[in-house]
Image (cartoon, rainbow, N blue to C red):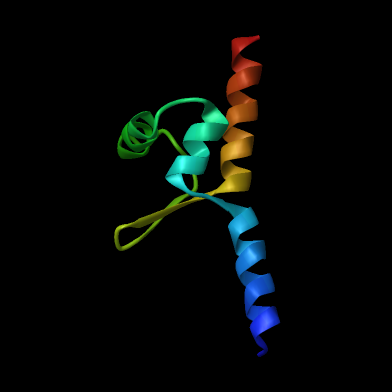
Length: 72
């Protein structure tokens, strides 16, 4: 596997997941609020890899869309 293939795979994986900081920006809340929501089990698609968190982007987008529909 070449270096460019590894880079492409990493870029594709980055598009599939939010970091806590990216999710905070998307939701327009603080990182602290994101960590509290994750702790309380409110955010779907959260995966822990030791101390690293990755949040599955499609699950969050679906969750946010469903929340919008409920508020209408």
